[in-house]
Image (cartoon, rainbow, N blue to C red; front, top):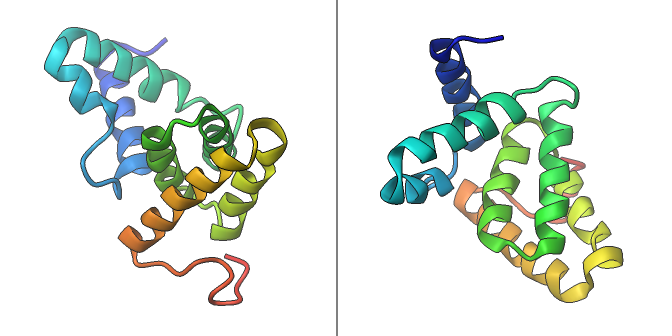
Length: 137
């Protein structure tokens, strides 16, 4: 069991790893405006405990998040987790494939919206579309 200081440090480290390329921050910035103490507790649970578990790799965890958020049509959150997936080693093709796979579960409209978000993320990062460079990354 981690003490509070260790959990805070783990939370910061995991958040930096996942979301350092995300401009505008994560939901945490919004949560703090309403309740700082609760925001801290939520962040320490999600980022410090759940997202830092080692049962799945960070790449696997983020690809799962991209898939789930695509089907749920949560475009703001899918943006954050596309950044995170790329930050922890998912290739551009893997992210696109995970999004395309969701047509079976959520339909083409959510896939198109997630691909639009993905295109914006690639532009923000200065990275090409997977099919543009012919690479498998």
